[in-house]
Length: 223
Image 1 (cartoon, rainbow, N blue to C red):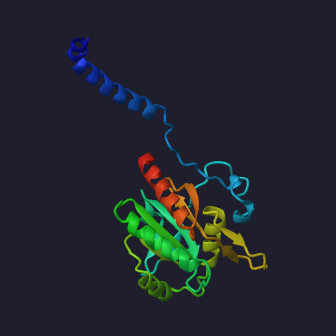
Image 2: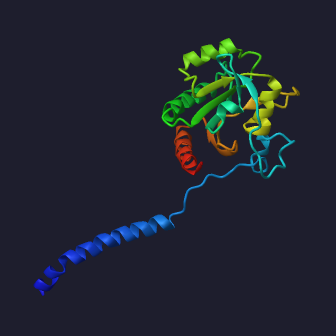
């Protein structure tokens, strides 16, 4: 009997190894591929969406824009062509959530610099205060890498419309000002087709981990 098993020992080992590979392959095939949703205005908290786009259920994307960054350069969608990017809204004198958001965005900057196809875009919601020199000083203070992170200012109307109609990341302040808004802590993940693929609490470390996880999924899924 022992001689019988000894005779087929190599075959048993080979079959055992082969079984492990087959089971691993089956598990891989059966495991669902992670996909990120594409967010539409109609399915986002209505407080964050301008009434003019609350009905939109498909084809929502970020339109072209023209804003000025911390170096006085005009930034448009062309600067983000074929890029995934993370957008947020802030202001330099914000005493509450902005410092933590900026710190987390800075940490993201260090994580994404290795990729080459991921950028950051931070919009001021107080353009009357945050001039180009103010943004430049803020950028230097927070070690902003100009190659991948733009801090932008522009007309209050355009920033308001981007926040409320495009990125769905700000509330109307309700005080009667036509373009007054309250920015949220949201970081917004945008794909190469300029579609929203995720919202994340920019003050929460666990949400930042989730963002980085989702970013990897998106990069693997993008052409």
